[in-house]
Length: 100
Figure 1: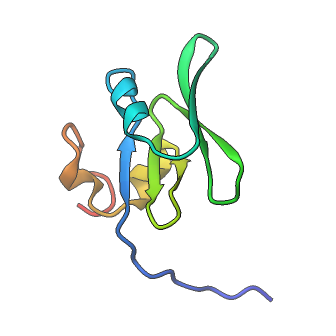
Figure 2: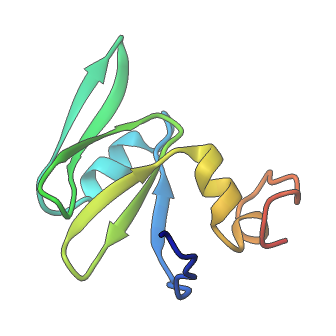
């Protein structure tokens, strides 16, 4: 019933949300977003393409959909395993990530 398909490569713009850059990331977002706290830690709430509000936690990556003006979070582990070129562009990378 289900068939396998391959998606076309697409270049994305993303930033990792960290305690060090949280204010800078918040100020760079456009569209609907809000800063909040969860268990005493900063989080961001961003509007997705589906109109839902997604929670971005410290360590997550925020991917921008510039065509629509929305964002979506990706967990760090998933970003590292699926984003080509991660190891080449990120200081401190071990080089074990896909794309290296």
